[in-house]
Image 1 (cartoon, chains in turn red, purple):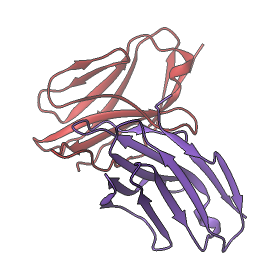
Image 2: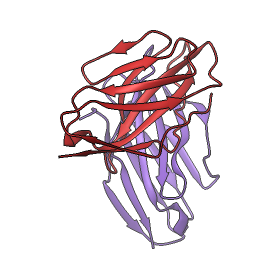
Image 3: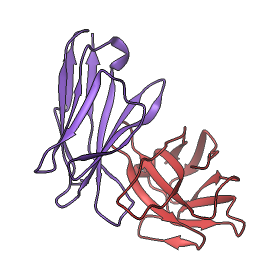
Length: 113
Length: 112
């Protein structure tokens, strides 16, 4: 699986959009970009994933550059409860169910009131 | 609430002992994963089971073993415990055809 690079920490004001970048310059054509987050010592939570098109769900939007070498997770209206470590993971999709997740250091997002 | 349950929530034991951590996946999920999160190693994949069979192995020590039972719950056995085994242990599950994993609340193991 491709290696990812994320800033170690970011701050965001409550109510503003939080934009979390991730570099994955060695990504292969069949690798997806996944985002998970972990709120202090809780189990990681799936947020969103994508291959090459931008994706949006009720939690966030994922913007993937055309060359797929980087992506941005956008939390449109950050709240205090969004304070967490955000992990960007690149992995190959497999036909059979699941495969391991390789977590890096992630980005500690702190949402300030 | 992800639907994945783990017991116990906390476990304190002494070096050299053996413990068993239990995980019940979401209803219908055939895959179960175990992860370890320690302060110095971060979140690391240990092992995956699919419908009772071992599917993938990560950085799991020989002192550790796991199994998945016919009712799909899984147990992680840790033996000859060392201080360095103190960590959060997470279980996750996923259904067929879906690559998102749903994590339980974890078991915090403290070895003294």
